Image (cartoon, rainbow, N blue to C red; front, side, top):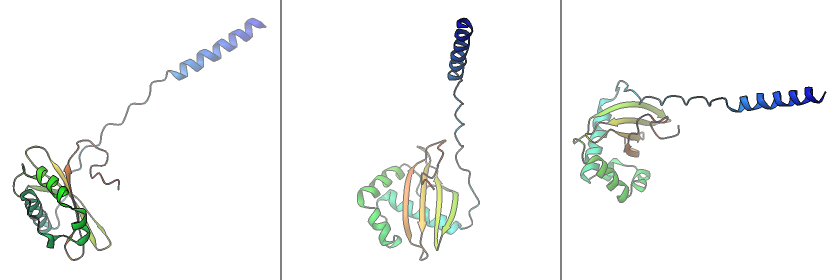
Amino acid sequence: MRIVLTSLIGAALLSGCAQAQVPAPKAAPAEPPPKSIPDPEPDVTLQVGAVLQQVGKGSLHAERLTDKAQAALAAPMLQQMGAVLRPCASPPPLVLLARTTKGEDRNYLYRALCPNGSLLVEVDYNKAARINRLVVRPEVKGSQDPAGTGR
């Protein structure tokens, strides 16, 4: 009887060890960067290019921004964006990646093509065609959330 119980306990322990050594599933491959979409508003793209050109030169006109954007884009933030945009063509070539609406606001996600790497540009326009939000940041290849918005 003792031999049978010892054998059963040994078998149970060995089967438990075998289960613990199952290899972990492989991580899913990174999502490819977003592809461009047709640009239904090329005039807006030209306006965004002009704004980026101004930011790169350190001369963004406040009348293009809402009060909220002016508060968010303090001088140090604009200087950082300007430094990132300076190596780019003036204005940088833009590729539309996404366009959404939220109420009367229009949200755009562009890829700015620059010699030192592409940048993601997020712009929110209000109903008066003034910029409510502007974000410029390097594009991270293969990220799960290319917009970095968590949306």
